[in-house]
Length: 155
Image (cartoon, rainbow, N blue to C red; front, top):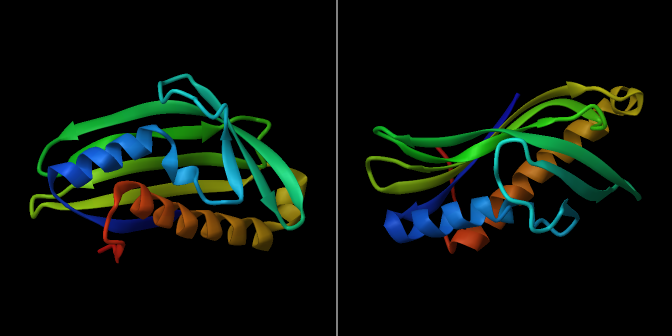
C-alpha cells in the first residue's frame, strides 16, 4: 500500500483548477510516462494505458476506471480510481482524489495498492517498487504545477 499527498493551496479557485487537472489526467505529466489515449475521458469502464520509459525500456500497462468519487461531507472530494487489467505488470488499484478540507486547504491524494502480476515484476520487485515511488513523487509535483499550488507536504 502506498499513500502520498500534497497540499495544493486554499480555496475554490485552487480546488477547481485541481479537479480540472485531475480529470484531464495531468497527474501523468511526469516527463517519462504518458497516458493513452491522450484524450481519454474519466468515466467508469474507460480503459487507459500508461506508456512509461524506465530502466532503459518502454512498457505499456493497461487499467480500467472502476469508480468515481464525488463526496460533499466535511471533506469535499472529487476523483476516481482505476484497476489494473490482466496485461498490466502489477495487480491492484490506484485512486486519485482532490480534497477540500474544512480549514480551506486543498490536497491532491494518491492511494495505491498492488502486487506483482507478471513474472518479471515478481523478479524485479525492488525495481517495480522504485518505479511506483518515483511515479508518486512526480505525480504530486505534476499536480502542484497543474493546480498552480503551493506544494507543501501533506499531513
